[in-house]
Image 1: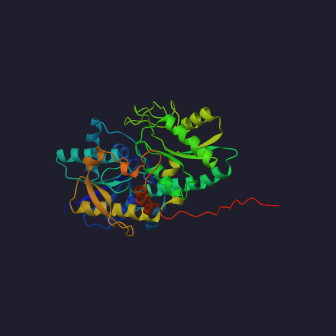
Image 2: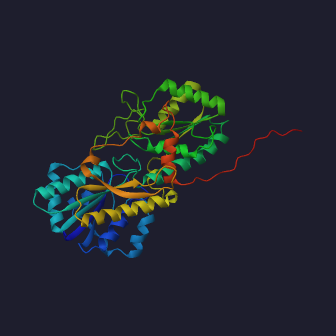
Image 3: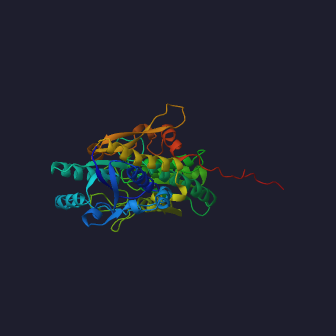
Amino acid sequence: MLKGNAIIGQSGGPTSVINASLAGVVDTASNSKAIRRVFGMRFGIEGVLQNFLLDLGAESKETLNGLKTTPSSALGSTRLKLQDEHFEPILKQLKKFDIRYFFMIGGNDTMDTIHRVVEYAQHSGYDMIGVGVSKTVDNDLFGTDHTPGYPSAARYVAMSVLQGGLLARDMQRVDQYVIFQTVGRSAGWLPGAAACARRSPADPPHIILMPEVPFEKDRFLSTVEQVQKRYGFCSVVCGEGVAYADGTPVSASQTTDKFGNVEFGAMGGTSAALMLHRMIEDAFGWRGEFQVTESLQMCAADRAVKLDIKEAYGCGREAVRLAVKGVDGVMVTITRENGKGEPYKSGFGTIELGKVANAERPVPKKFIRADGLFVTQQFLDYVQPLIGELPSYASLAIKRAKP
């Protein structure tokens, strides 16, 4: 059994339950015979480079327990892309603190960071084990049924569209359409979750635009017009990364981050929702609304799903359990253990870090309706157990009074 200290970091965008995973790692590592001390990276891998580590063992039990229901990234996050010159100083710091167990919570780029740091250490003759804990509201990590953080963000979207849909329905004489934009650069898992708000064909959302389906302006506008004529208004949900067939984002942004990813809504571009809003306004002359909540989907603790908190904490615990057993170079995954028609039940598995870092998981075709403008029942069967029951609101019968 490898003995030494452990370090944990958070990277990329946060979720409502990322700190539950942090608590799972710290709690389990603190009780391990193989791990003497537990350190935290302040602002991800930047904390290692800048000699800014936190002594997580000095935190009170009350604080650590409170992390389970605290949103955002308690350690502080980063989007630093590692360069070749970073590895030597990183290893020097890890040796200084006798780090033998290396944990990070994040998405594709984070898994790549773990893989590269641990591989460099091992090639340099320094024994260290690295295990990743999955995280992303986008739900696009390869090899897992879903990611911690997705259920809570999906519920946020569904609740927003449900409640905003009532507003849109009742304000249809003022605004004939409303567009709600979700985060999700290249996957439609979040916009798809909005379908859980719909109980009848008249209910929002009426149209769901996903990055997996090339955007067709004429088809979109034709459908908007049909829906508005039928119900008096049209509710549209779109992923921020929806794009035309040639790959041009509907948002038309030309700004990219350090990893080369398009920054939707950044300066130099606009949001997909605003562009869709302009299309409808130009085509029909209607007044409408667009709603872009951005990072609120990542930190709405008031809508966090208890299942999500439990699974996120469990992923942190499982990462430590695997590491002290000598399992290296993997990310903890969530597996769905129930059969069709059975109550939801999950477990844990693993996937190699390299496979996660170099792959994405789009929404499969079987989850997308044939016309590309909504999801299928199979998608609803997948997502509804994750977000739980939504509230039911009263609606008037709308019976015209007679004198």
